[in-house]
Amino acid sequence: MKEDHTEEIRFVSAIGAVGGGIHEESLDEAMAQEPHFIAADAGTTDAGPYSLGSGLSAFPREMIKQDLALMLRAGKRAGVPVLVGSAGTAGGDAHVDWTLDIAREVAKENDLSIRTAVIHSEQDKSYLKQLLRENRIRPLDPAPPVDARTIDRSIRVVGMMGVEPLQRALEGGADFVLAGRCSDSALFAALPILRGFPEGLAWHAGKISECGTMAAETMGKGVLFGTVRRDHFVIRPIGPGLKCTPQSVAAHSLYENADPYLHQESSGTLDLSKSTYEKVDDISVRIAGSAFIPRETYSVKLEGAELVGYQSLIVGGIRDRFVIKHLDSWLAGVRERIEAGVTKTFAKTLSKNEYHLTFHIYGRDGVMGGMEPDHTTIPKEIGLVLEATAPTQEIATTIALLSRQPLLHNPVAEWKGAVTTFACLHNPAHIDRGPVYRFNFHHVALPHNKEEMFRMKFVNLGNPVYETSATH
Amino acid sequence: MKLVQLTNLIRSKNAGPFSLTFDIMFPDEQSYIRVKRSGVLSAASFAELYRCRPETVRFFECDNALAFKFSIPRPIFQGDLGDGDLHGGQQFMPLLDIEIP
Image (tube, rainbow over all chains, first blue to last red; front, side, top):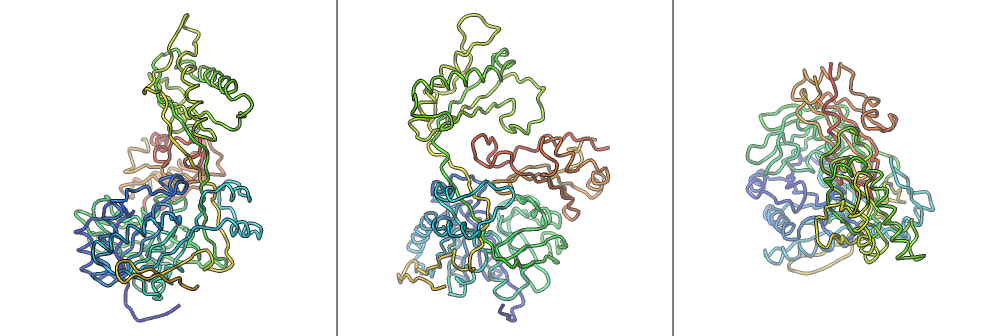
């Protein structure tokens, strides 16, 4: 690792997610303090598998463009690099290229010339199969089962890069690093580590900063400013009324993490069990003691999505206290009648395991499902969502059409004569939802070297136009 | 006293698509210590409340954050068929009424 005599590395975390709307005044104020780089992550799995499956962003294009413009203008003005990771929510090739197009527009409209390192992290299926054969794909806990068929079924699999590809981009003189799926913390850790600052402090600074102002006591408009030194780092929010306290910063490492102390990265484990948090002034916190334990085997987290099927919904409600009293047996009757209808309609062309009927029962356990502990409260009213999932939209729609009558007219013992047991919300009663996806990997790949999973090229946005493939 | 009366935040959230995590946070050291010393929060008590196997529950006492954390595998992976809470944010209510002596 290179050593130099820089006393500190300063950075701005412009926002927790590109497209969320960067607060311009706060960014300007942060830029006045001469940061060495600006970074923001653009992705998350928290939005669900749809983005990875569909190739689309969970944030609107116009908002992403505004945020990119603010960062790229600020970066160019100050002559410091801008790093954006997990482009387009899921960080697949389609997401990266879509974001690159937006950045190209920004460069043109703002008359900027931006030397851009584009790093793709989508994984080739035959390469993944090779890794699988070589026992180089290992499950995390808990993980869905994975075999060669899982790889075939996947629409898209991405590998989560660590600091190494970002560092190559920075060494190559990039003004803008646009990365596919990327560890959020790595965006902030890459430069400090490259300059020889302690890895534990660099990664921890990244871990805190990647959610923007979320590490503040109350989240709000603004940016987060980090200063990494040899034996500690300081986190300070910039924005109206924002304030970090030792507790708010310590507590942030709990957020969305299963383990509050140990965080896995490609090159090792960030260990926060000995971290100390100390008040600097009313709004800033000094952190020390964070350790990084390098791992012998370099590992890259995989994320994949596959098509579950196509879906149609029926949304409605039940107010009849007798139906609610017998809800489970009544729904079993509805299911039976729908299944009989499906069998009659599709005969032998659709077997029972090729489609799914899922009931979500709001008012009872719609939110918590099997984890709901309260089974004694009898609701006044039930909200019901029926999901029909099938191999094609046409079949899913047909099943939804076949479901309306059973929902409307399934009898209940207390009433004699014709009854209408379900209040449809819509006309037509069903809503076609299109494709639905699931995450199908919770695994790490153990590549043969640190480079082979990530492909980098340099392009110039604005003038002059050029494109070169970087050699590894 | 109920747990909710001593805390300033009880929340749940996805920790990636395959795990759920629960945070219980306190405004002051006194309240945190009171709950910690009571011994009421444990992997076993959480497992009973959430109908999961105790060996799948990870429990953390985070002194510097004045917080407790539980993490479990998601019973249904995020967004898969049957999942009713994509972000895992509405799973914490059973914790509120835990009785603290």
